[in-house]
Image (cartoon, rainbow, N blue to C red; front, side, top):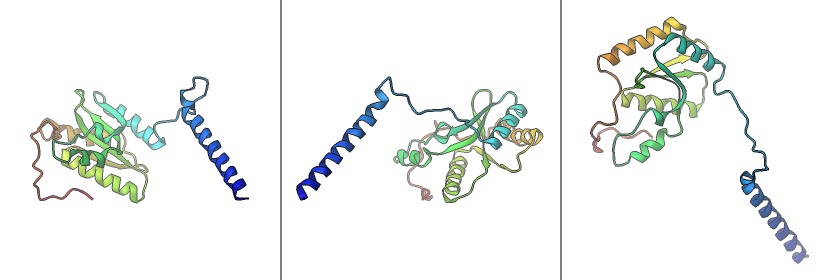
Length: 184
């Protein structure tokens, strides 16, 4: 009986292994349909805000769902990879740039709650503060109109024109001996 059970188990393992092998190589087969489909990149409140941003900010570049690492870099420090890992999986809802593609501000639309969301927002906020990037937060249930958008971005443009803009990565390396501990 043990031999029969062992043979059955061996056949099941072989069948499972063959099935996984076929499944793994299926993407290479030109005759196998891939399971991709389109989806809307913006949820409803994000679509509304995007249209308002574009209308309110002519002459600006408005981008959405931008990876944080596409906007913020890490100065040359000994453990720069650790700092990059901290922000690698995060995205900004919107990024507003000047005509020369300099970052003017990032916009976060607060629409969800939860511990992971709170931690991610805290990391983005700390990273933006460190880089000198202004972060604007708006509630999804109370989206600003075009006038409010123009006022908020207009104030940031004044600061930017006065040289109070972002902290570029080409600055000299930071000293690793500092009093501030990295975020948990």
